[in-house]
Image (cartoon, rainbow, N blue to C red; front, top):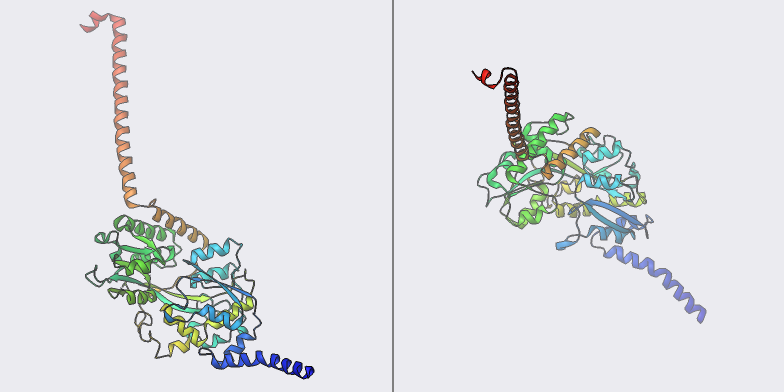
Length: 426
C-alpha cells in the first residue's frame, strides 16, 4: 500500500510543474504559449541583466500600462537592474570611466557611431534576436551602423519647440523666439550640448556636424547671447513638470514628449521651426563591458515583441520602427502629426565628431552655462579695459609732465649757477 501511495505521489509531483506551466500559458492574457516557451527555454533563470536607458523611456506599469521589465523577469526568470541616464554624454562618460557592467544601453545615432569607432560595442548575434524581422526596412542599416552589426532601432523622433499658448500670442516659426527678451526667465533649454548647439547652428545656417572650429565658436557666442538676454533654465527630464505647470513660455525638447505634456496641460502646443530640427534614432546596443550578452540579446528581442513594442509606443509617445505598431490602426498615436508626421520637417542628423571638436564643444558648453562666455561679461571686461587704459594714459601724461617740469627746473638751476640768478633773469 505504501509503495502504491509513494508511486501516486511521485506521479503527482512530476505532473504538477508541467500542468502548472501549461495552465499558466493557457491563462496568460498577454503572451502566446509560443512566446512563453521561447523565453522560459533560454536558460536565463537566476541571471541578471543590467539595462541603462533614458528616463521615462519604457512602459513601467503606471496608469494601467504594462510593466515591461517585470514581464521580462516573469517570462525569463532573470533579474533586471534598470537605471537611467539624462544624456548621451553622461552615458558615454559612465562607460568610458570603467568600473561598470551594463548589458543593454540605448544611445542615440551619433553616440552609437562614436562607440563603434572606439570599439566599445559588441556585435549582436541576430540568431538570438529573431524580432529583427519586425523592424521596417527604412529603419535598418542606418547611417550610423550601415552593416547592422551593433544596433537595433528602438525609436525615431525629432526635436521640437514646445510653447504655452497662454503666454505666447503667435505660433512661433523660428528658433529665434528663444532669444526674445520679453520671455526672460520663461525659457527651458536643453541641458545637453549637442541639442543646444544644434539650435544655434540651425539659426546660423550651419551643418550640425561641422568640423570648422570657428563655426562652433560662433554658435557658442549665440548661446552666450541667449543666456544674457533670457536667462534660460537648462533642463532635461525636469522639463515635464516645469512645462506642465504653465509657468514657462517655451521649452526645447523632443516631439514625442510634447504629446505627453499636452495630455497633462492642453494649453501646450508645438512647432517645427523653419530653420530645421534634429532627426534622431535611438537604438539598443550591447557594450563591451557586458557580463550577460545572451540576456542582453533576449531583452532586446523582448522589447520588439508586438505586444511590448505597442505598450512602449503608447507609453513614451515616440515613433516605433516596429511594423506591428506602424500598421496598427488602433494605436492611439496612429496618424498623430507630432509623432508620425505625414511630411517630415526640415532637419539634419547628428554624426560622430572628431575628438578635437568634441573637446572644443565640451569646453564651450561649460563656458556658456557658467557665464564665462557671456556677451555682457565681455562688454563689462571691455569697459574695464577702456577705463584702465584711460587711467593709465592720464598717469603717463602726469609722469611725462612731471619729467618735463623737473627738466626745465634743473635747466634753470644750472643756468643760475653759471650766470648768477640776477644776470640770468635779466
